[in-house]
Length: 531
Ligand code: 16G
Ligand code: ZN
Image 1 (cartoon, rainbow, N blue to C red):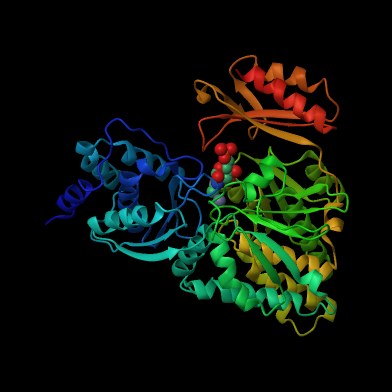
Image 2: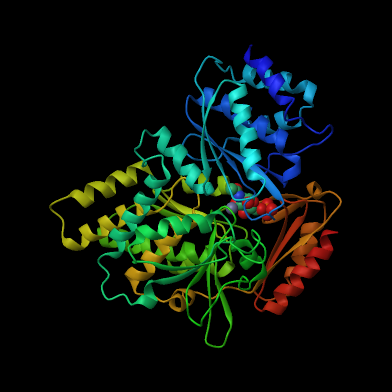
């Protein structure tokens, strides 16, 4: 039977509901799991084509991250572990929306446009999160791969960043690490142990961290990782999935948006806590102080901590490498000011969405990128990695320079350069705090966040809002930006913007100002202007 006949036959088992239209958004397709079976099958087909086109292994991750348990989603991973290119996002949308009888035509269209050699081998790595729908949906992906004659490898339950890592390892022939879950842990924990080994006299309190696993995949993986950490990090795991519902009243997104602790975590004053999201590609830290007040250390605070650490190491190592930080419009104004004015770090602002930040970070020798919501990582250019490695091996340099170069090397190894990774970020943050002998309170007090508020507004059609300047200004509908500008003028240290969400059918409103009351009031008034 020809490949196309097989596709036709198999696609009948994964039929598309007539008329259903879905879009490959910021992070792939994401909606109620019941609507996704045909999408998964078709993404299996597309990943197979992408693999033939790139002559490399492609990843397909089944997850809806921080969305509710009932939702699911799918996202394609390109050869180096990065997000798939915009042209292929377009193909994904076309394929997803072709009615059943038009599927072959849509498929052949991609093959023709991309001049794909169908005799080429195709390899697809598949992973899934812990949602109850994920098992059958990831099977649908693999059905799509095999219908088109590709090979799939099922990694089963993995975090999103773990699958990105596997794809990158496979396509760099092991240079990035072994493409196994064990290879991932061993790379990370060895780097972590190396980073912390010179720190003496750490008390048990300093080694202790409470982790909110959002009742998801991150919880399972932290458990697996823990055994390797040789008590250098002692984790109390909460929301491990044994009782609670995925992302419900817990997880990084809940904590960031609600600005309050998750349920299910026992918190004592001054203790470090962190929350992962549902697929463990985001992390935020927080604590309560002795007065019971909640303090959030989000992606901006993480970026600052990591940038400070790296900058100090570069100075100690005597290296002149170009370091930059990449943020989005959501970055707290205080963090941008601190990075630019105090740290003298170059700061770039991009549109929301990992692919935009990742891309901008690649322009630097060392690019630290974080969204305020806790998604981020550090990218080192190949040249920077080589310079650091040479220095670490140079017999003629003094101990201080050598120590700094080795720390930079271990930072490269502990961080997941393919994508933001809650586990990798957590290990780097814990190592930095240990090395600097810093408490979470001291970290928090590096700068004070401006009070802020995020709201979402339901509108008839969110696409009428068009933005420019990295989403900081609305260019349509006419008059909206003027209305926002005149509202902002009424508050001190204020800033506000609106943007259509890429993952939900809503418009998002962000406001910050000198006081919480002002930020709340401004956000509210701007959301009224959006209607
Ligand atoms: C997705 C993005 C995340 C972004 C969020 C914004 C990826 C992998 N994830 O989750 O970076 O912050 O969307 O959502 O790109 P929004 O458009 O609904 O505000
Ligand atoms: Zn996520």
